[in-house]
Length: 268
Ligand code: GA4
Image 1 (tube, helix red, strand yellow):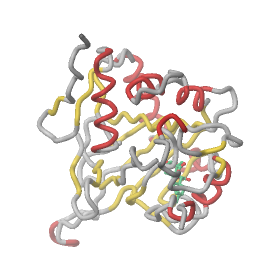
Image 2 (cartoon, helix red, strand yellow):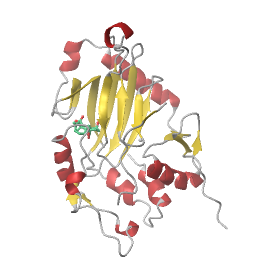
Image 3 (tube, rainbow, N blue to C red):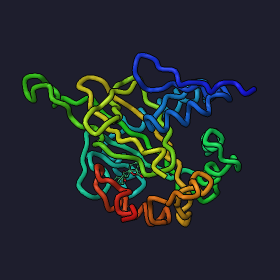
């Protein structure tokens, strides 16, 4: 008899915490993706030394004089400050976006019952994947002041959904990331229609600096994007017109952060 599926565990926040060293956690991952589109991973095997070296290097980079950082300015990759994308979005943030070419998909494919276990990981571990690594720095924001702005929120990174297949995020101990569970409520985080890309945003902090690093796992530019046939029932139809990752990326690059990027690919 098979063991019952491991249920996601919840800490103080409603965000599921998944122990990925436990092979039984695959169903919990799938449930977290369906219910939240976001989960916290523990026992991931990435050494804390490596994480802190990376974080220190990021802090060092952002402490450089502005003139040195702007030498790396560019689009889509490079250094940027305040402006996000090229369609008028701004935030209390500076960042460094880099092209990166890794494997996280096998547990999810397994959890979804997809026979070929590397279906998803193959998409993002090809030698020519369109994956990226992003460092974000949200400096303390003096504008948040009870006397001058009534202590209102200042947006660090406006609400948006990530276009890629999976995003892996690590941040220092500064709050700010929020995910949207329904269209009206925001929950503070200490991620054919089954898994939705979670809407999220970052709020600036009045006193503390927030540094985050995100790996966005994307497929190759020519990859055709369509629901996996093994996940579609016989009578069920795809909800979307087929497109390539390159087509989707182009339309994302021409969108504003808060736009619904899948809408234009929806079937009538
Ligand atoms: C969100 C996820 C990644 O950070 C990113 C972002 C990209 C950018 O900063 O250039 C986008 C944004 C992100 C989605 C909509 C478009 C493109 C800014 C923007 C307004 C690098 C990505 O791939 O999409």
